[in-house]
Image (tube, rainbow, N blue to C red; front, side, top):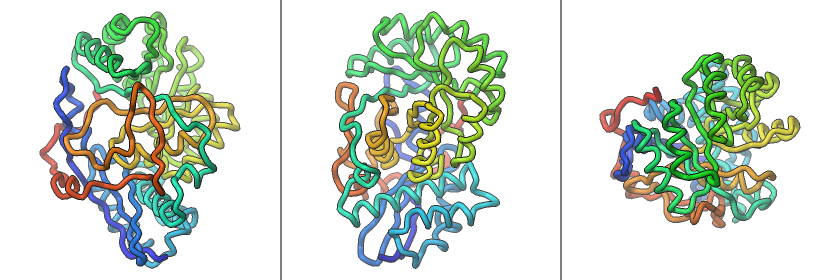
Length: 371
Protein backbone atom coordinates (compact mmCIF):
# COMPACT_ATOMS: atom_id res chain seq x y z
CA UNK A 1 0.00 0.00 0.00
CA UNK A 2 1.62 3.21 -1.20
CA UNK A 3 1.19 6.72 0.15
CA UNK A 4 -0.36 8.99 -2.46
CA UNK A 5 -0.79 12.24 -0.53
CA UNK A 6 -0.15 13.88 2.83
CA UNK A 7 -2.34 16.80 3.87
CA UNK A 8 -2.46 19.11 6.84
CA UNK A 9 -5.58 21.06 7.78
CA UNK A 10 -5.10 24.02 10.11
CA UNK A 11 -8.24 24.73 12.12
CA UNK A 12 -9.67 27.44 14.36
CA UNK A 13 -12.63 25.81 16.08
CA UNK A 14 -14.31 28.05 18.68
CA UNK A 15 -14.76 26.78 22.20
CA UNK A 16 -18.22 26.63 23.71
CA UNK A 17 -18.82 29.48 26.17
CA UNK A 18 -17.72 28.66 29.69
CA UNK A 19 -18.73 29.98 33.09
CA UNK A 20 -16.56 31.20 34.62
CA UNK A 21 -14.82 32.56 31.52
CA UNK A 22 -11.14 31.99 30.73
CA UNK A 23 -8.83 33.86 28.38
CA UNK A 24 -7.47 30.50 27.24
CA UNK A 25 -10.71 29.74 25.41
CA UNK A 26 -9.64 31.91 22.47
CA UNK A 27 -6.74 29.74 21.31
CA UNK A 28 -7.62 26.28 22.63
CA UNK A 29 -9.45 25.29 19.44
CA UNK A 30 -6.44 25.89 17.20
CA UNK A 31 -5.11 22.59 15.93
CA UNK A 32 -3.72 20.81 12.90
CA UNK A 33 -5.27 17.61 11.56
CA UNK A 34 -2.96 15.43 9.42
CA UNK A 35 -4.25 13.08 6.73
CA UNK A 36 -2.19 10.37 5.00
CA UNK A 37 -3.88 8.97 1.88
CA UNK A 38 -3.06 5.71 0.06
CA UNK A 39 -3.59 4.02 -3.28
CA UNK A 40 -5.93 1.48 -1.65
CA UNK A 41 -8.36 4.13 -0.44
CA UNK A 42 -7.47 3.87 3.25
CA UNK A 43 -6.60 7.04 5.11
CA UNK A 44 -4.69 7.64 8.32
CA UNK A 45 -5.62 10.49 10.65
CA UNK A 46 -3.37 12.32 13.07
CA UNK A 47 -3.33 15.54 15.06
CA UNK A 48 -0.50 17.68 16.29
CA UNK A 49 0.23 20.52 18.65
CA UNK A 50 0.12 23.87 16.87
CA UNK A 51 -0.75 26.64 19.34
CA UNK A 52 1.07 29.78 18.27
CA UNK A 53 1.40 28.98 14.57
CA UNK A 54 -0.85 26.31 13.01
CA UNK A 55 -0.03 27.39 9.41
CA UNK A 56 3.69 26.91 10.07
CA UNK A 57 3.17 23.37 11.33
CA UNK A 58 0.90 22.60 8.36
CA UNK A 59 3.53 24.00 5.97
CA UNK A 60 6.21 21.68 7.37
CA UNK A 61 3.89 18.71 6.83
CA UNK A 62 3.04 19.57 3.23
CA UNK A 63 6.24 21.25 2.02
CA UNK A 64 8.91 19.18 3.79
CA UNK A 65 7.45 15.83 4.83
CA UNK A 66 5.02 15.06 2.02
CA UNK A 67 7.75 14.83 -0.67
CA UNK A 68 9.58 12.27 1.48
CA UNK A 69 6.51 10.10 1.97
CA UNK A 70 4.60 10.02 -1.31
CA UNK A 71 5.31 6.71 -3.03
CA UNK A 72 6.54 5.03 0.14
CA UNK A 73 5.12 1.84 1.66
CA UNK A 74 2.68 3.13 4.29
CA UNK A 75 3.22 0.14 6.57
CA UNK A 76 6.89 0.92 7.29
CA UNK A 77 6.08 3.22 10.18
CA UNK A 78 9.39 3.01 12.04
CA UNK A 79 11.38 3.43 8.82
CA UNK A 80 9.34 6.45 7.78
CA UNK A 81 9.59 8.04 11.23
CA UNK A 82 13.38 7.68 11.09
CA UNK A 83 13.40 9.08 7.54
CA UNK A 84 11.46 12.16 8.63
CA UNK A 85 13.66 12.74 11.66
CA UNK A 86 16.89 12.42 9.69
CA UNK A 87 15.64 14.68 6.93
CA UNK A 88 14.76 17.30 9.52
CA UNK A 89 18.14 17.24 11.23
CA UNK A 90 18.65 20.99 10.75
CA UNK A 91 15.15 22.17 11.64
CA UNK A 92 13.08 19.44 13.28
CA UNK A 93 14.87 18.14 16.36
CA UNK A 94 12.25 19.97 18.39
CA UNK A 95 9.58 22.65 18.11
CA UNK A 96 7.33 23.05 15.09
CA UNK A 97 9.30 20.64 12.91
CA UNK A 98 9.06 17.82 15.43
CA UNK A 99 5.38 18.57 16.00
CA UNK A 100 4.79 18.06 12.27
CA UNK A 101 6.67 14.75 12.32
CA UNK A 102 4.67 13.62 15.36
CA UNK A 103 1.35 14.34 13.68
CA UNK A 104 2.29 12.49 10.50
CA UNK A 105 3.69 9.53 12.43
CA UNK A 106 0.42 9.31 14.38
CA UNK A 107 -1.51 9.16 11.11
CA UNK A 108 0.75 6.32 9.92
CA UNK A 109 -0.06 4.31 13.06
CA UNK A 110 -3.76 4.96 12.51
CA UNK A 111 -3.37 3.72 8.96
CA UNK A 112 -1.49 0.61 10.10
CA UNK A 113 -4.29 -0.24 12.53
CA UNK A 114 -6.89 0.17 9.80
CA UNK A 115 -4.85 -2.05 7.49
CA UNK A 116 -4.63 -4.79 10.13
CA UNK A 117 -8.18 -4.27 11.39
CA UNK A 118 -6.87 -3.69 14.93
CA UNK A 119 -7.16 -0.85 17.42
CA UNK A 120 -3.93 0.95 18.21
CA UNK A 121 -3.67 -0.54 21.70
CA UNK A 122 -3.58 -4.02 20.15
CA UNK A 123 -0.69 -3.00 17.90
CA UNK A 124 1.11 -1.77 21.02
CA UNK A 125 0.80 -5.11 22.80
CA UNK A 126 -2.78 -5.17 24.01
CA UNK A 127 -4.68 -3.62 26.88
CA UNK A 128 -3.03 -3.33 30.26
CA UNK A 129 -5.65 -0.91 31.56
CA UNK A 130 -9.07 -1.30 29.86
CA UNK A 131 -10.39 1.65 31.86
CA UNK A 132 -8.36 4.71 32.78
CA UNK A 133 -8.85 7.36 35.40
CA UNK A 134 -8.96 10.83 33.84
CA UNK A 135 -8.06 14.17 35.34
CA UNK A 136 -9.57 17.46 34.25
CA UNK A 137 -6.86 19.78 32.98
CA UNK A 138 -8.32 23.18 33.70
CA UNK A 139 -8.18 26.48 31.88
CA UNK A 140 -6.40 29.41 33.51
CA UNK A 141 -8.66 31.85 35.33
CA UNK A 142 -8.22 35.48 36.34
CA UNK A 143 -9.51 35.29 39.91
CA UNK A 144 -9.41 32.75 42.77
CA UNK A 145 -13.21 32.80 42.97
CA UNK A 146 -13.38 31.69 39.33
CA UNK A 147 -10.94 28.88 40.05
CA UNK A 148 -13.09 27.69 42.93
CA UNK A 149 -16.27 27.79 40.83
CA UNK A 150 -14.64 25.85 37.98
CA UNK A 151 -13.35 23.21 40.41
CA UNK A 152 -16.80 22.74 41.92
CA UNK A 153 -18.33 22.35 38.46
CA UNK A 154 -15.80 19.68 37.45
CA UNK A 155 -16.19 17.72 40.67
CA UNK A 156 -19.95 17.75 40.08
CA UNK A 157 -19.22 16.07 36.72
CA UNK A 158 -17.47 13.21 38.49
CA UNK A 159 -13.80 14.19 38.31
CA UNK A 160 -11.79 13.31 41.38
CA UNK A 161 -8.52 14.71 40.00
CA UNK A 162 -8.05 18.30 38.82
CA UNK A 163 -5.03 20.12 37.41
CA UNK A 164 -4.83 23.87 37.89
CA UNK A 165 -2.96 26.24 35.59
CA UNK A 166 -2.54 29.13 38.00
CA UNK A 167 0.58 30.93 39.23
CA UNK A 168 -0.69 32.39 42.51
CA UNK A 169 -1.10 30.88 45.94
CA UNK A 170 -4.53 32.40 46.46
CA UNK A 171 -6.00 30.40 43.58
CA UNK A 172 -4.56 27.14 44.87
CA UNK A 173 -5.93 27.88 48.32
CA UNK A 174 -9.35 28.66 46.84
CA UNK A 175 -9.33 25.40 44.86
CA UNK A 176 -8.46 23.29 47.90
CA UNK A 177 -11.10 24.98 50.05
CA UNK A 178 -13.70 24.49 47.29
CA UNK A 179 -13.14 20.76 46.77
CA UNK A 180 -11.99 19.59 50.20
CA UNK A 181 -9.19 17.18 51.09
CA UNK A 182 -10.36 14.12 49.16
CA UNK A 183 -10.03 15.54 45.63
CA UNK A 184 -6.57 15.26 44.06
CA UNK A 185 -5.06 18.55 42.90
CA UNK A 186 -2.06 19.17 40.65
CA UNK A 187 -0.61 22.49 39.54
CA UNK A 188 0.90 23.25 36.12
CA UNK A 189 2.59 26.65 36.24
CA UNK A 190 3.79 26.66 32.59
CA UNK A 191 7.43 27.60 33.27
CA UNK A 192 7.18 31.04 34.95
CA UNK A 193 9.89 31.11 37.65
CA UNK A 194 13.59 30.97 38.34
CA UNK A 195 14.71 27.92 40.33
CA UNK A 196 14.96 30.02 43.49
CA UNK A 197 11.47 31.43 43.04
CA UNK A 198 10.09 27.96 42.28
CA UNK A 199 11.57 26.53 45.48
CA UNK A 200 10.08 29.33 47.56
CA UNK A 201 6.66 28.87 45.98
CA UNK A 202 6.79 25.07 46.28
CA UNK A 203 7.37 25.41 50.00
CA UNK A 204 4.46 27.82 50.30
CA UNK A 205 2.24 25.35 48.42
CA UNK A 206 2.98 22.43 50.75
CA UNK A 207 -0.16 22.86 52.92
CA UNK A 208 -2.42 22.28 49.89
CA UNK A 209 -1.32 18.67 49.36
CA UNK A 210 -0.62 18.77 45.61
CA UNK A 211 0.00 15.53 43.71
CA UNK A 212 2.66 17.31 41.66
CA UNK A 213 4.00 20.72 40.67
CA UNK A 214 4.42 20.83 36.90
CA UNK A 215 6.94 22.87 34.91
CA UNK A 216 7.81 25.48 37.54
CA UNK A 217 11.08 26.68 35.93
CA UNK A 218 11.86 29.00 33.02
CA UNK A 219 13.25 28.04 30.59
CA UNK A 220 12.08 24.42 30.34
CA UNK A 221 15.50 23.43 28.99
CA UNK A 222 17.11 24.27 32.35
CA UNK A 223 17.31 20.67 33.53
CA UNK A 224 19.87 21.46 36.21
CA UNK A 225 17.69 24.26 37.61
CA UNK A 226 14.66 21.97 37.63
CA UNK A 227 16.72 19.27 39.38
CA UNK A 228 17.60 21.79 42.08
CA UNK A 229 13.91 22.52 42.57
CA UNK A 230 13.15 18.81 42.77
CA UNK A 231 15.78 18.31 45.47
CA UNK A 232 14.40 21.12 47.63
CA UNK A 233 10.67 20.94 46.88
CA UNK A 234 8.26 19.24 49.29
CA UNK A 235 6.02 18.54 46.27
CA UNK A 236 6.84 16.01 43.50
CA UNK A 237 8.00 17.67 40.26
CA UNK A 238 6.51 16.80 36.85
CA UNK A 239 7.75 17.89 33.43
CA UNK A 240 8.31 16.78 29.85
CA UNK A 241 5.66 18.32 27.59
CA UNK A 242 8.24 20.72 26.15
CA UNK A 243 10.84 18.03 25.44
CA UNK A 244 11.17 16.43 22.03
CA UNK A 245 12.65 13.05 21.06
CA UNK A 246 14.28 10.32 23.07
CA UNK A 247 17.52 12.16 23.68
CA UNK A 248 15.85 15.25 25.10
CA UNK A 249 14.16 13.02 27.65
CA UNK A 250 17.40 11.19 28.37
CA UNK A 251 18.88 14.52 29.44
CA UNK A 252 15.88 15.35 31.61
CA UNK A 253 16.10 11.99 33.38
CA UNK A 254 19.89 12.05 33.70
CA UNK A 255 19.70 15.42 35.47
CA UNK A 256 17.40 13.92 38.11
CA UNK A 257 14.92 16.69 37.34
CA UNK A 258 11.54 14.97 37.63
CA UNK A 259 9.41 12.66 39.74
CA UNK A 260 6.78 12.28 36.99
CA UNK A 261 7.66 12.23 33.27
CA UNK A 262 5.17 13.81 30.86
CA UNK A 263 5.84 13.22 27.17
CA UNK A 264 3.32 14.73 24.77
CA UNK A 265 2.91 12.28 21.89
CA UNK A 266 2.96 14.68 18.89
CA UNK A 267 5.47 17.08 20.48
CA UNK A 268 7.81 14.22 21.39
CA UNK A 269 7.88 12.95 17.80
CA UNK A 270 5.04 10.47 17.63
CA UNK A 271 3.75 7.22 19.08
CA UNK A 272 6.89 5.18 18.36
CA UNK A 273 9.16 7.82 19.90
CA UNK A 274 6.89 8.00 22.94
CA UNK A 275 7.16 4.24 23.41
CA UNK A 276 10.95 4.58 23.52
CA UNK A 277 10.65 7.40 26.05
CA UNK A 278 8.34 5.26 28.19
CA UNK A 279 10.92 2.44 28.11
CA UNK A 280 13.59 4.92 29.20
CA UNK A 281 11.36 6.11 32.05
CA UNK A 282 10.65 2.52 33.10
CA UNK A 283 14.39 1.82 33.29
CA UNK A 284 14.72 4.89 35.55
CA UNK A 285 11.73 3.75 37.66
CA UNK A 286 9.82 6.93 36.81
CA UNK A 287 6.03 7.02 36.34
CA UNK A 288 4.72 8.38 33.03
CA UNK A 289 1.67 10.65 32.85
CA UNK A 290 1.18 11.55 29.19
CA UNK A 291 0.58 15.22 28.48
CA UNK A 292 -2.47 15.84 26.29
CA UNK A 293 -4.08 19.22 25.71
CA UNK A 294 -6.01 18.01 22.68
CA UNK A 295 -9.62 17.73 21.56
CA UNK A 296 -9.20 15.44 18.54
CA UNK A 297 -7.27 12.38 17.32
CA UNK A 298 -4.24 13.12 19.55
CA UNK A 299 -6.46 12.66 22.60
CA UNK A 300 -7.42 9.27 21.19
CA UNK A 301 -3.76 8.35 20.64
CA UNK A 302 -2.98 9.36 24.22
CA UNK A 303 -5.74 7.15 25.63
CA UNK A 304 -4.60 4.19 23.48
CA UNK A 305 -0.96 4.48 24.55
CA UNK A 306 -1.87 5.00 28.20
CA UNK A 307 -4.12 1.93 28.09
CA UNK A 308 -1.26 -0.17 26.71
CA UNK A 309 1.33 0.73 29.37
CA UNK A 310 1.49 -0.28 33.01
CA UNK A 311 1.20 1.93 36.05
CA UNK A 312 -1.68 3.87 37.50
CA UNK A 313 -1.08 7.40 36.25
CA UNK A 314 -4.24 9.20 35.05
CA UNK A 315 -4.99 10.52 31.58
CA UNK A 316 -5.17 14.27 30.97
CA UNK A 317 -8.43 15.59 29.51
CA UNK A 318 -8.64 19.29 28.67
CA UNK A 319 -11.45 21.26 30.25
CA UNK A 320 -14.08 22.63 27.89
CA UNK A 321 -15.63 21.56 24.61
CA UNK A 322 -15.22 22.66 21.03
CA UNK A 323 -18.22 24.23 19.31
CA UNK A 324 -17.93 21.51 16.65
CA UNK A 325 -15.98 18.36 17.58
CA UNK A 326 -13.32 17.22 15.12
CA UNK A 327 -14.33 13.61 15.69
CA UNK A 328 -17.37 11.63 16.73
CA UNK A 329 -18.26 10.24 20.18
CA UNK A 330 -15.45 7.67 20.25
CA UNK A 331 -13.97 9.08 23.45
CA UNK A 332 -16.35 9.88 26.27
CA UNK A 333 -15.33 10.71 29.83
CA UNK A 334 -17.88 9.39 32.34
CA UNK A 335 -17.56 10.09 36.04
CA UNK A 336 -13.85 10.76 35.68
CA UNK A 337 -13.03 7.60 33.71
CA UNK A 338 -12.30 6.96 30.03
CA UNK A 339 -11.91 3.88 27.83
CA UNK A 340 -9.92 3.56 24.58
CA UNK A 341 -11.87 3.39 21.33
CA UNK A 342 -12.22 -0.14 19.98
CA UNK A 343 -12.31 0.62 16.23
CA UNK A 344 -9.32 -0.02 13.97
CA UNK A 345 -6.38 2.35 14.31
CA UNK A 346 -7.22 5.26 16.56
CA UNK A 347 -10.89 4.33 16.23
CA UNK A 348 -11.68 7.92 15.30
CA UNK A 349 -13.11 9.46 12.15
CA UNK A 350 -12.77 13.18 11.55
CA UNK A 351 -15.86 15.26 10.99
CA UNK A 352 -15.59 16.55 7.43
CA UNK A 353 -18.08 19.33 8.04
CA UNK A 354 -15.97 20.69 10.90
CA UNK A 355 -12.89 20.72 8.68
CA UNK A 356 -14.78 22.69 6.03
CA UNK A 357 -16.44 25.15 8.41
CA UNK A 358 -13.51 26.15 10.60
CA UNK A 359 -10.36 26.84 8.59
CA UNK A 360 -7.59 28.58 10.47
CA UNK A 361 -7.89 32.35 10.75
CA UNK A 362 -5.16 34.46 12.33
CA UNK A 363 -7.59 36.90 13.95
CA UNK A 364 -9.83 34.35 15.63
CA UNK A 365 -7.99 34.38 18.95
CA UNK A 366 -5.79 36.41 21.19
CA UNK A 367 -2.03 35.75 20.94
CA UNK A 368 -0.82 32.54 22.53
CA UNK A 369 0.58 33.87 25.82
CA UNK A 370 0.73 31.84 29.02
CA UNK A 371 1.84 34.64 31.34
